[in-house]
Image (cartoon, rainbow, N blue to C red; front, side, top):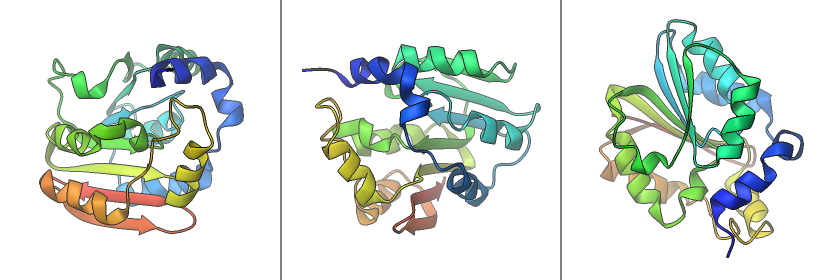
Amino acid sequence: MKLQKDFFNSVASTWDETSNHNMTKVEYILDLVRIKSGSNVLDVGTGTGILIPSLYRRVTQSGYIKAIDMADKMIEVARKKYKCDNVIFECGDVLDMNDDKVIYDHIICYSMFPHFQCRKKEAVNKLAQKLKNGGKFTICHSQSREEINNIHSRADEAVKEDNLPTMATMREYFSTAGLKVLEEVDNEKMFVIIGCR
């Protein structure tokens, strides 16, 4: 069976041409998050760095972005595209990231949360612990939950079971992790949940 990492490595070179990211919707979502200049942001599952320009404009030179992805080929593409002193790219599993002493103003899982597979609840708990008090945790997609789940069901075997849970389930995960839900959007255009520690 092909592993997720192998699948994402195999599509990294063509990802930007083949994946659908409506940047108008992405900007709308990030406006909801309200990232301030000087913020520390963890971009989980950055892929080829889709969010990096939008995040960089918000955190400015005085902020810091750590972009992590388990697929080394995705990180290679992102590194080639973006060279900023305050953007750090790292290859690895964010749930095994024990040496990271930085605590974040924002942790964002854009278009990747289903890929935590059976570790979704654990992921929310672990990532919430990396937030500052008052920090925000955002899980978001620029497509609807139904569309995301349909795309995955027709995709490679490595990701076909990677489903986005219902908003009710996400709310429960956030509550268990000690996050207060600030914003929910679950419609035919996008899926967004923002919680505050």
